[in-house]
Image 1 (tube, rainbow, N blue to C red):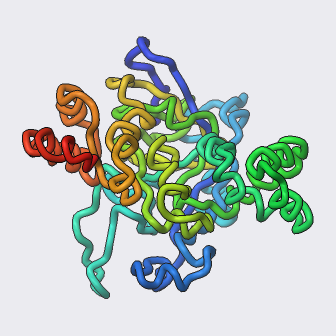
Image 2 (spheres, rainbow, N blue to C red):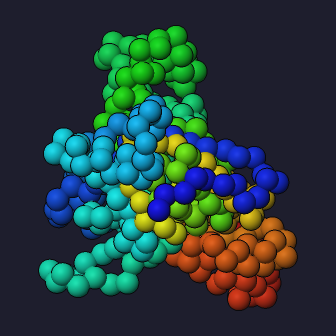
Length: 355
């Protein structure tokens, strides 16, 4: 039975975000899972390919009617009437989006058997606000906007003494360019995400945050587990440089490549639905804060390879490792490894500036 959303802790800011698009994996092809050697030979649009699902647009007004009957019955009737017109995006614990595999589930060869999934990576969210922060960075803006600006305008920008400033002025002075970018992102996402939302960025969300559907329009309940640590495919997808000057590196430092969640209770998503935060046990540990601490303060050698490092007090490292909701892969495992080897790192890595 669908219940009304209740906030269990009022000591935090009750933020919320709205669903702008839900995405499925395209039929499995070799180019969607390229090896490192294959990446250089593929065009950008052949990497991390996603298909926007045709989910039913959610309208809150539909929940208000004169007819008797529970909210669940009204929604069930609406879904039955629309089942031939729209796709259903249902998310289950562990496996995530029903009928589509992502980062957390991999097949063993051609067998239908699957290795245990990373249940703490069941859904990959990304926000328009994160895209906005990336495109606002002068060294990266061209990777997000050049495809929407005429060739003449691109040449004018390249000939400018301050390419980043010129490009930002060009897009800021033309609202249609901004609209084109947003629409293009929603139709053709650049980070391989499951869901694109609006209303939050990596600065607002913390590890362990729980989100539930506003108004009780779906039973879906999720828990934030970690930032998404981008790989080389993010640079390839965005046509970016690799290394310290690429999209991957900047997104890794500030947690802008999206965030993973586990599914606590199964449910469906539709465009326009709103998720509201109902619990925040670790408000200090925002996605941006965690990303900066573990992947954004190392040496160029470490950061260019997306290797974890720790330049802060060991007490704070212990605090990070104590977060029960923290995703294991790439986050808890890396932090715990450094903590287990702390004596060596403190005596060798720091002195030799390996960080």
